[in-house]
Every structure is written in structure tokens, then in C-alpha cells.
Amino acid sequence: MKRFFTALLFIGGTACAADLQPSKDAGPYVPSPQSVVSDMLRYADVNEKDFLIDLGSGDGRIVLTAAKVFGARGFGVEIKDDLVRKSNETAQKEGLADRVKFMKQDLFKTDMSQATVITMYLLPDTVNLLKDKFLNELRPGTRIVSHDYPLTGWIPEKYVQMDLEDKIEISGVTTTLIYLYVVPAKVQGKWSATMPPAVSKQPATLQLRQQLTRVSGSLRLDGRDVPLEDAKLRGDRISFKLAGRKGEFTGQVKGNSIEGTFDGKTPWSASLGG
Ligand SMILES: C[S@@+](CC[C@H](N)C(=O)[O-])C[C@H]1O[C@@H](n2cnc3c(N)ncnc32)[C@H](O)[C@@H]1O
Image 1 (cartoon, helix red, strand yellow):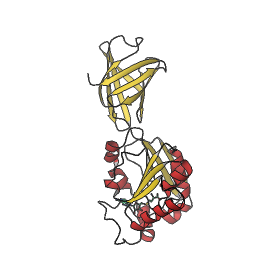
Image 2 (cartoon, protein in one colour; image 1 turned 180 degrees about the vertical axis):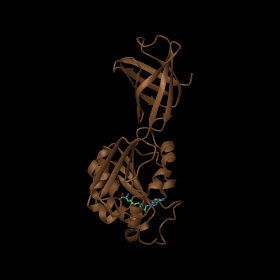
Image 3 (cartoon, protein in one colour; image 1 turned 90 degrees about the vertical axis):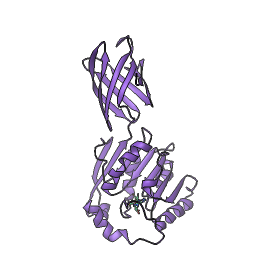
Image 4 (spheres, protein in one colour; image 1 turned 135 degrees about the horizontal axis):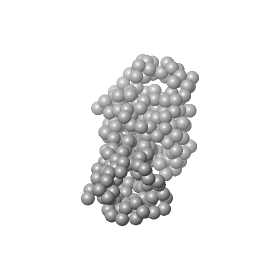
């Protein structure tokens, strides 16, 4: 945090009258080095099917690179008028204006529901203030990439630390971190499950407990609770094993139902409630 504020002193500049007064200032203008931008987009596996939103888009480099190099669409939101103007001018110049745009808008009031990828380089407390908004607005499977600061309590899908000379000018140290998260589906609750006959011929009850990206639980079979092992939730994909038994259940969460296969072959399904 201290590193970021050091940067503020010599890069931040003063507020211009045309700048937007946000509900909260999420940090000064400090551009991510271009190599970090490329890494962020690569780790998130950004491609032409993606819609990327950069929260606090600065000079637009993340959204512009996502469109130019990776073929994505998207937008950036930014409070500083000159940066929004510059970003839209670059988009025009580079022939990207039909796929990306930049808006003078408060990131805390931005509708993110269209995103398949969110990127950000913001102050650490701000990143964490956004957690509920992410869970409420983003679809399961949406990737979130954060430069330098983590979403506390979320297990990153990927976490990379490197040393970069470019960062000395920005933060006074070479340390650079990139965190990749995947928004989890909501699975907490009691599910009424139809299991493969080899597991149970009767309807079974799948009890799932969830803490953000962590999932655990048990399957009630023939009056006995069998704990789940190796339970994982990645976006809308769930997988688990039954303690003491062979085989893996995989499935896709679609709102109030799960459909999947046991050992990649026999179907199983579950519906919430019941
Ligand atoms: C550290 S810079 C990151 C710029 C760009 N995303 C990058 O990585 O190169 C953070 C940007 O967020 C903008 N910002 C701060 N608070 C904001 C808010 N509430 N809404 C929108 N933008 C904000 C700042 O003006 C600044 O340009």
C-alpha cells in the first residue's frame, strides 16, 4: 500500500475540474507496465469471445491491448477526463473504436454484468471493497485479474510473482504480482441428487457448504453421510470424490441444477432444494 502511495506523490497529479468526483478514489493514475498488461491478459487466457472491463482504465492500455492483440471487446471506466479522452482517441487511431470504448464513470457504480474478464490495478482496500459486487454481478466463470493486490479470502486460480525493473519508477521496488481468480457459482445448500445406479438406486441428498471459492460437503446415501473428498469449484464447474470410494463426479452448475458425469461416463444430476 505504501508503495502505491509513493507513486501517487510523483505520478498522480492534481484533479482537473472536468474529472469525475467518484464515490471513492480507488487510487492515482499509475500505468501497468506493458509487459505486465500482456501477462495479465495471457494468464486470463483472453480471446476473441471475451468482453473485458478494466476498472480504472488509465490510458486504456489493458482494454486496447486485449482488443488489438487478443481480439476481445470491452470497455474501460475512468474518472480522469483527459485519460478517457486519450483512450478513446487511441482506440480511433488504432481502428479499435468499434470494439472498445472508454467512459468517464465511477467504477463502484459500473454495471459489470457483461464482463467475462475483469482487470484492475487499484489500491488494496479498494480491490477488497469490490468483492461483494463481483459475487453479485459477475457470472460464474468470469475471470478477474488483479495487478499487485489480492482479493483476500479468495483462492487464486493462478498467482505469479516476478521482479521487474520497470516497477521501480512506479512503486520503488521490483516486486510485481499478478492474481487470477474465477468467480464461483453459488452452490451452498441441500441438493436432491440422482446418482448413477452403481452409486445409489435411490434419490440421494448432496449437502454442499461453500466459502467463496472453497467447497466441502457430504452425500447422504442409504441413511449414511459420506463425506466429499477433493471437492473443487472453478466457476460453474464442480468436481468431487466420495470418501473411501473410487471414481470422480464432475458437473456443471446451471442456476438451481447440476448436470454431470461420473468418471466421465455415467450421468448424474442434482437440483437445489428437495
Ligand atoms: C493505478 S491506475 C491503473 C490504470 C490502468 N488500469 C493500468 O493498469 O494501466 C488506477 C486508475 O483508476 C482511476 N480511478 C480511481 N478511482 C476511480 C473510480 N472510483 N472510478 C473510476 N476510476 C477510478 C484512476 O484515475 C487511475 O487512472
